[in-house]
Image (cartoon, rainbow, N blue to C red; front, side, top):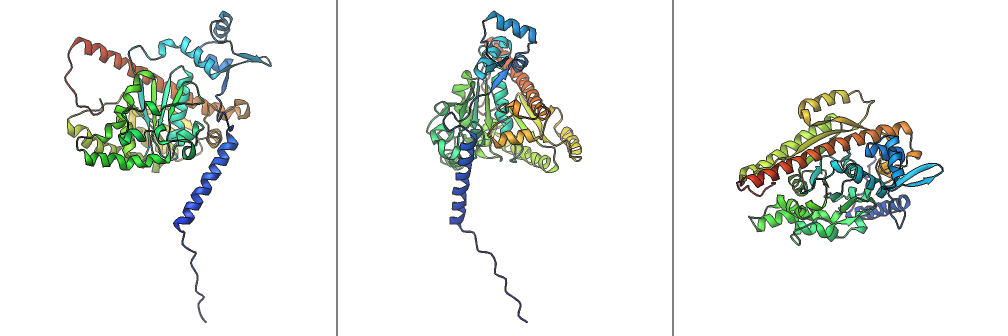
Length: 409
């Protein structure tokens, strides 16, 4: 009896892959159009009196007093409830929190959000942090260094079809400009400007080493550092979202930063991956910075426990490993894994974009409170960084300083 010959499935050709890519791009565009208004794209949220009071650290009595003074925007009353636009909320925050904003003579504190792996809430953390800081009155610039453009998408811009190369950091990487300033655009969120990311940024991974090969004096790792310099005095905080790898752009982002935040889910594989990430980063900085007689210091490096599943019994053990390994770098807050954050992401938003009336109150409060705590902790570190800038400036005026190599100063 003859054995039937099994016929293997056909090969998948490059043409078929291209067709799938085009189809998926079309679906993404349809989803984006369905989720976002076709003209306004995304609209900024409004805030209740209670939310405004929390942001400005006021009790209800003091809030009512400020409204009666008629100095700050009174908001709009509808159905007996007072709501404030985001712009009005920022006006209140900048007035009543003036002592916590950037001191005169200081410049933006630059923060990179990075991790070796995708799916760890890296982009969500970066965007939520930007929104939270903006709500507190800070002027924020976000720079999407990831060719996937996830941060750009969360701001209502489709990377594949709505971003040109001159709206990204690519001209900087190619040597066509020495500043990111021309690439900056406004967003739907007052107080946050954007340098977009798009698939064309993959070219930077070839351009930077090519320039290094052509010119041995060229420092590929410092391109973003110098490119940001002209705009540092114009913003309070600059947040860089990096690719999920230790790429040339990730190295640039880290060495341009004053602080680093690594979102890290409490899973064994993510913890092991984070170890590899820092090993590689240490090796690279040894070659690029220390071996060249230069130095690089960070105001802070944070590890943020993210996507924490309270029902996962193994997570508690991994938390202990993370705390043992990273020590004081671990922020004293955990961002829970909730259906709310998943839904917000699917709708191209964050917890700050969610309409509270449409959310489960308990779930919303868990996620919102966690991110609010993260924003508060990071803001405290930003303020400490400004204090160091002031101390450094005062020291510079009192005595001459020795020259320092250019890398990461």
